[in-house]
Amino acid sequence: MLKGKTVVVGVCGGIAAYKAVEVVSRLKKLNADVHVIMTKNAEKFVAPLTFRSICHNPVITDMFEEPKIWDIQHISLAQKADLVVVAPATANIIGKVAGGIADDMLSTTIMAAHSPVLFVPAMNDKMYENPIVQENIQKLALHGYLFMEPDTGLMACGTSGKGRFPSPERVVDYVKEILMRDADYEGLKILVTAGPTREPIDPVRYISNHSSGKMGYAVAKAALERGACVKLVTGPVNIAPPSGAEVVRVSSAVDMYNEVMKSYESFDVIVMVAAVADYRCASVSEKKIKKSGETLTIELVKNPDIAAELGKVKGDRILVGFSAETDNLLGNAVSKLALKNMDMIVANDVTMEGAGFGVDTNIVKLIKRGGSRIDLPVMSKENVAHKILDEVLSIRKR
Ligand code: PMT
Image (cartoon, rainbow, N blue to C red; front, side, top):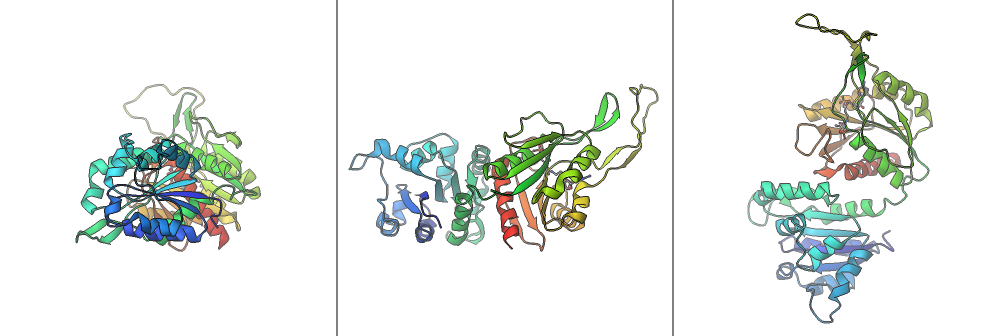
């Protein structure tokens, strides 16, 4: 399944280093070309020979050891890799990369890599929760580095909490997802809505929200990268759409409703990222409203709910919605999922730092019809988009 793919596994010094042996073994069984780089401390937990026996490639432990091929090795492995997986990733390697330090073969390879880099953190729960570690994770996520959430449970140090290495099976499943993305949307048509809507009050004023379009544009871009044919229906934003998409610019919720309902039939997947205004002005003043009394009352009427309307007519198309919440995240998201007959909803707590409106990262939970849920750590919006698309494909395959 992974024939022709090169995976570099970076092993750091932590008790979970022994679980990396199973990760390497599983990748090898999938026919990946696996190369292992160990840090000095990793060697204290597992012998390089163990990895070499499994991956059938030399294990790199020292930049300067004989034969002296180090000057090209970090570059050649970094260039050759389709994916770098750092497992287990300690607070130390995360901190080093976040700080731009490249002082051994692993940190140097990560810095020089062109491929995606996936960190699988495993450490004491207090270390993982340390704000410095969390800031480093956020910083790296912003630059597109991928992270898996550690598991919660009893740890080697005797305490219980969040910091356990996830099961090797889960790590390899994620690796497969990343490596199999190349053209898995070829032949599929995706309709994406993005940005805010503007509900006019008079010729110079409107009601809107803080959506920048970044999340929706990231979904459109990721789908294009994976070979989909993409239509992007976008509210007014200040960012450039990804090239290759058919772009239709709209302003109000009613405009967006008309455009989406006109064309949804020819699409296989619809992803509703737009922050659509629930209400519009009952009447729009033709002239600028002049300042007069101490208060001004504007009557609002309900806008059409585009996602809910699609839910009624979608047939076997996959409908994905977002749920931007400031409280009761899961409760609200789950009821919208059911109410709008969606196949999946992306629950988005917009009060969290690094999530929601305007920023380049997001922190979301993917909830599918039937209740299964995936909690994602902070990720760039591009990587969130890819995870959404991964899950859409898994729904289609069912
Ligand atoms: O654009 P960014 O700055 O990157 O910010 C991203 C985001 C915060 C806008 C995005 O991640 C997000 O959460 N989008 C959904 C915002 C929203 O309107 O959520 P909602 O809970 O109000 O709506 C639920 C779903 O119904 C959404 O899929 C929405 O597109 C859809 N809807 C809502 C109202 C309406 N009248 N018609 C709709 O189709």
